[in-house]
Image 1 (cartoon, helix red, strand yellow):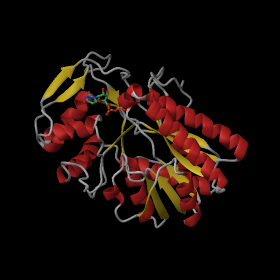
Image 2: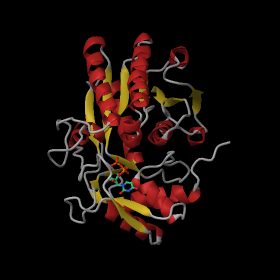
Image 3: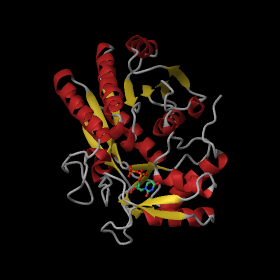
Length: 329
Ligand code: UDP
């Protein structure tokens, strides 16, 4: 397969690029490096480019005879999306529409799209399946839902074949420990906990311990980044085999509370972490757990990293090796 990976220098993108290359597919990484790190794909074919650079995007698709696109390039911080919706609508909606239009001009009709559990908002039922009500509670989730709807329209009108993957809480790192999560600013629980273990932060803030859960802290479904990567490859293969467009959840089906994650990190690292209970963070539902039965049944996907200790150990290896993330000159 000859695949263009937009945002391939990002966290989930770089893991997917590595896995695709391991299977000997031809991969072209297309990234503007605003959030991504060139270092994370240093051995890959790389084009530094923006989704809005229509000319370069088209030239790249033509030059490399691209057959399908995996589209990661997007902004993904919930808090930032509420403060600066313009940025999110521009990049995630306009940028993706531009990509769809260029694909259409180049006659490319296969697309795997990064979506998110944030499209659901506050769930009515746990576990959440793909047919659940979709009422995002933040701008980030809304931009992804808008694009899911746009892709459905493009599919009907123009024959686009797409698979949208709704990630729950992406985490962990490749076993090699040389690529991993490096966001600026960092807002995700596991990297923040591990940075606290490294002494880079004084304490981990627990955003509310008065939720209706057993220990009072929020429960999330943490899914390893390589399990996500694998789902992208299965999706591409399905599209190449002529599969119809589809939307799938990706989680491992187990929920862990914030306190459980911190305790597991203490066990894995052998370091006691200073904790601070703070008020709830706006927009955080108490419990988010995925049902991923649909992708298991239809594409044969199975998460390998079902043990949260193993997940955190993989992230810990990355953080220990790269306490400052990808340091680039
Ligand atoms: N969280 C926390 N302290 C932090 C960061 C996150 O207590 O410093 C909690 C957050 O409220 C949520 C869970 O950890 O319940 C996972 O948050 P994260 O930002 O990693 O992912 P999200 O669920 O928002 O996608």
